Image (cartoon, rainbow, N blue to C red; front, side, top):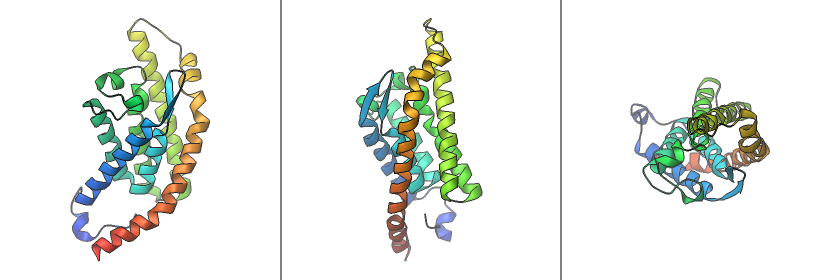
Length: 196
C-alpha cells in the first residue's frame, strides 16, 4: 500500500484505516459463510479472506479486521461458518482455529515491517502463521475435550482438523496473494487520488 502522508502518520488509526478494517471483517465473514464440512472442522474460504485482507490492506488494517471479525462473532453477529455466533463458538473445541487467525495477522505484520512487502516474505509469514494456527487450534481442541472428560489424542485431532486442510489452505493462500497483487494497484491509485 502507498505510504500515508505526514498528517496521517501522526494518527495511530485513521478513518481510512477504520473503513478498510471494517471491509476486511466483512470479506472474512462472507468467506466464512462459504463452507463444506469435512470431519469436525468446516472447509471454508475463511483463510482465503484472512490472507487476502492482510495482503491487500496491510498488517495493521488486516489485524484489526481479524480482531473485529472475532469480536463481532463473540457478540452474537452470525459471522462464523454456518452463520454461527456467540462465545460458545470460540470456547468450543474448534474455537482455537478461529483465534489462530490472529497469529497469521501478527506474524505477517511483523515480517512485512521488518523485511518489506516482498512475495517471499508474504508466503513465508503466511506459512508460519498457518503453522501457529494449526498448533494452537489443535492444542485448544485437545484441551477442551480433555476438560469435558472426552479426552482425544493429538494424532486423532491432526488427522481430523489439520491434515485434510493443508492443501486447501495452500491453494487459498496462493489465490489470495494473486488477487491482492491484482487489486493492490487499484487501491493504491485510489488512496493517492484522495490525498491529491
